[in-house]
Amino acid sequence: MRLLIIEDDRDATEYLVKAFREVGHVADQAGDGEEGLALALEGQYDVLIIDRMLPKRDGLSIIAELRTQSIETPVLILSALGQVDDRVKGLRAGGDDYLAKPYAFSELLARVEALARRRGSRGEETVYRVGDLELNRLSHEVTRAGQELQLQPREFRLLEYLMRHAGQVVTRTMLLENVWDYHFDPQTNVIDVHISRLRSKIDKGFAQPLLHTVRGAGYMIRDGAR
Image 1 (cartoon, helix red, strand yellow):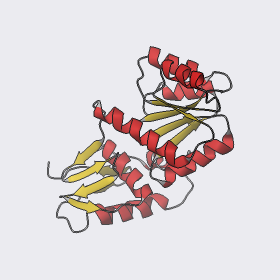
Image 2 (spheres, rainbow, N blue to C red; image 1 turned 90 degrees about the vertical axis):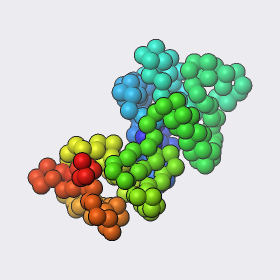
Image 3 (cartoon, one colour; image 1 turned 30 degrees about the horizontal axis):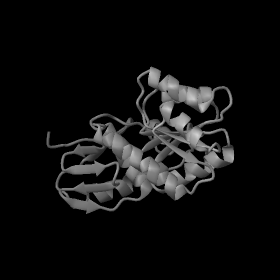
Image 4 (cartoon, rainbow, N blue to C red; image 1 turned 180 degrees about the vertical axis):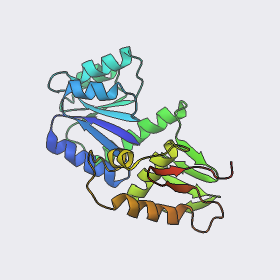
């Protein structure tokens, strides 16, 4: 899943970003309402996690603006305001779920995954296929020719991004920004190492390679049988 966390508490945000990444999800962050709204309007997220009390623009007005703009991304509201009236107000404003602070990450994760599944049941693409390779974004299962492949969380994110752009050249910069969240080249071989590991898992032992290096440009995943 690709998540957006709109929260002005930096420590809380860093904790959530780290926790979500450890279970294989991509988590972007925004520290105020205006930045959060701008990112959310791009419509590239599976679930939005929005605090109610934010600088520059409050959480409920963000949700209202998204719904006005026909952005139907599921929203989980986080708030220290946990009374019944507060929850009702948040849900009526367009939120899909409401979780009061303090909370346990396990419950937050379960609620976020439930929202993603609900969205998937309405037709959102949750399974990517390239040839006989299949990746399920919700169950985190990857199979090739019916054989289950065991991927580490970072490898899963890397493969998900490549399969989302199947048939297209994906550059190192694109991978650094979208899989590693680096907005600069750290001058390491981190991508080469992970590509090599991923290739050994999805191509080794199969007659037709799917993951290709495009010299001087980047990488591409495609069905070579076509």
